[in-house]
Amino acid sequence: MSGPSLFVLGGARSGKSRYAQARAEAAGANPVFVATAEAFDDEMRERIARHRADRDMRWTTVEAPRELPAAIDAVNGEGAVVLVDCLTLWVSNLLLADANIARAGQQLCDAIGRFEGTLILVANEVGLGIVPDNALARAFRDAAGQLNQSVAATAAEVVLVTAGLPLTLKPRH
Image (tube, rainbow, N blue to C red; front, side):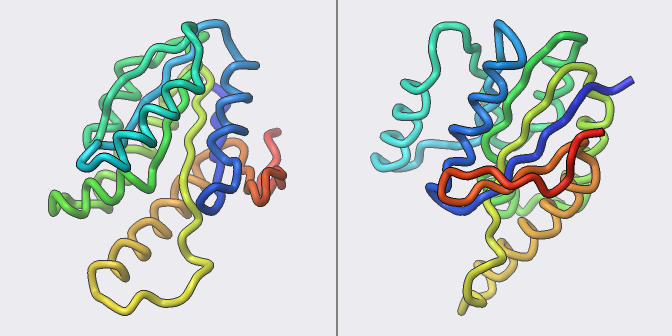
């Protein structure tokens, strides 16, 4: 029997990560943060450091820039509280590694379905802007949008965060 899963979507700087972290902290005493970001430059190293500083000593961090379904399976268990931030960076990592994103997305949805604790996943909603002017950016937008649809269909609850305000798109039953 799988546990409750929450998918949190929003634009850049929308408050989605803060909302997801608060939900994880309310769900359990020893949450696990599964990070998909890789620090390739100083700006990204700064962002990662800021996110780490926002989490207190209760948190354990697991790095999973590409092998996300396996990382989720590794921390699976009744009573586990896991926050994955973020699926959009994961898609970017897979795209740049020339991985099969559709297969990886199916493996992720399978891992979500198997999860026995509380699983919270964060992603950017990238489809609300203009159509990108280059093939790589369009491929990224399309892959992220397809993954978001699959995860939203799989998750028990879906929340869109805009301007720091959560809007429930799919209530948990």
